Image 1 (tube, rainbow, N blue to C red):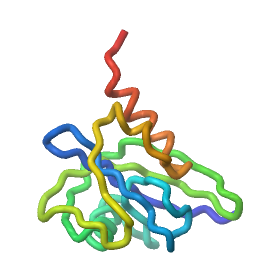
Image 2 (spheres, rainbow, N blue to C red):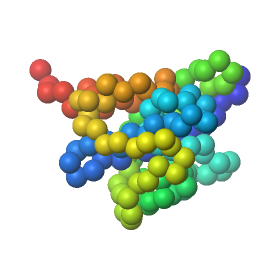
Image 3 (cartoon, rainbow, N blue to C red):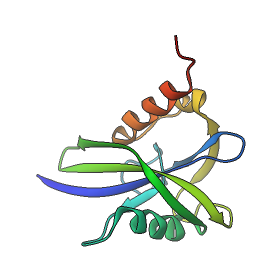
Length: 134
């Protein structure tokens, strides 16, 4: 089974909201939510990849900060190695060039969306981080 290396941006605004992107009807996994990003090109560093992908998909610039979460998810015909990277907005505002819609949500509300399966572990990690420690 082919494995595709993919980066996804965890972008938080100054209101502690996370950027969520709705996959459009012409994409695979249509009408599911994801963290924006895309495939890592051959010999490309993951931070360069996320900065390039966000510029292409959202028309703005981010700076990749650190690896937040990593997992491998198997779909029917391929496997995704998803690397979620915390990013800081550096220029412009995100616009949905490839996605149907973009929204900003507080961590505790992320569970209200229908997420692409590969993104779910990172979503759960973000929600867990927001809940008060016992």
